[in-house]
Amino acid sequence: MLGLRDLARDSRGVVLILVLSTVAMFTAMVLSFSSDQGDDIELAYNFRDSLQAYYLADAGVEAAKALLKDDDTNYDGLDEDWAKFSEYAAASSALLDGPVFVGEITDECSKIDINSLVKEDGTLDDIRKEQFKRLFGILNIDITEDELNNLIDAIIDWLDPGGEPTGLGGAEDDFYQALDRPYVCKNRNMDTIE
Picture 1: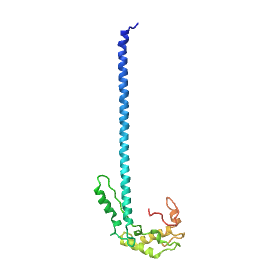
Picture 2: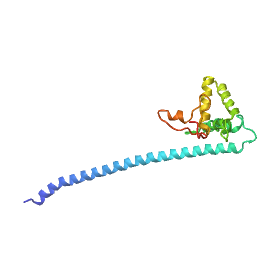
Picture 3: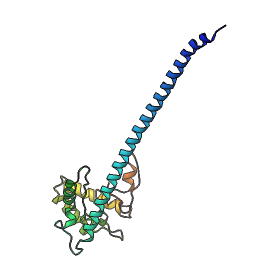
Picture 4: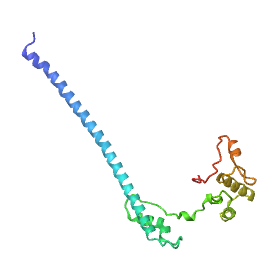
């Protein structure tokens, strides 16, 4: 039979195991908290950066709105303040420490409306067709006159409501259905030029 002294000697080993287990458990908890805290810090940095980017973009949009609000609507030209917005954005960003914003304002009326090749009644607008031809010449695009005519004819056929090909380069459903990935000709205005 074991005496009190024997039990006391044997329990020292149990206490040691208990202390080591407690230390190991606390170490695991501290490491877990530390890892969670690192994740929380990373989330806080990401939130800060997202918020900063949002307000920087919002400031850029508001600056653009202010320029457009003060615009003289009787005249549009590249010498106006709105046309120099990218320069203003760069100058403003130079004053900031850290992130910057860039942007530009483009006059949508300065773009050529490709849908204008065909009038609302579905007929060809000859004046617009000639403007498109001149544009390719001004831009020095390397294309022969026949290729240019074929391209414009294909665009016209995409836009016009008819089913007959325009000129030699026109393309209606028959052409598009013969492709590897067949589809039908839209015969309506383009939504985008992509």
